[in-house]
Image 1 (cartoon, one colour):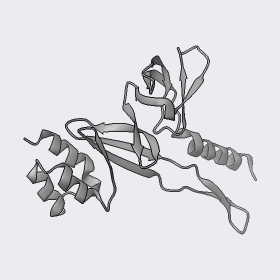
Image 2 (cartoon, helix red, strand yellow):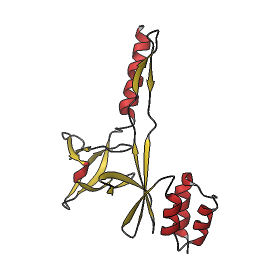
Image 3 (cartoon, helix red, strand yellow):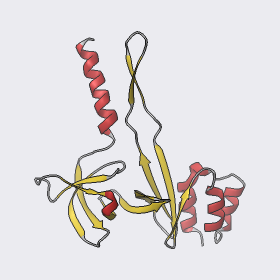
Length: 187
């Protein structure tokens, strides 16, 4: 294998496995489930798995805290809340705030290297898994393509125009952000 191809494969492997997970550190506040608050430099990521890396300051050593011990996390760019979905908790990012909140959790899987019959390699990446959650008056609902109409009809009953648009398929599952923005401005 030539040197250039090897470097290209290693770069692609690195970007696939690490490029979307850690984007450095930024000011943040971690609120633990015990109510303690940790003002620190927090690992910036698209989504968090079972741990979050943090530093007390930019020159300090790196620590990690299990996400199961976190109630919420605030960074300059996002607010995250630990939300129970079925039997699992996910640290989810707040996308839309208002009388109805929309949270999202993104799981990105690293690719799997495969070989062709002639020995060439290529990567197969699974599609990311996206979980949406509606929070309204302290109640959380997981939204899926199959249940979102029923949940929106029930939760947004006080805004007939939204419900009508969902029932008549003017708004689809892919329009969740538009639905929430419109609902939060509905009188």
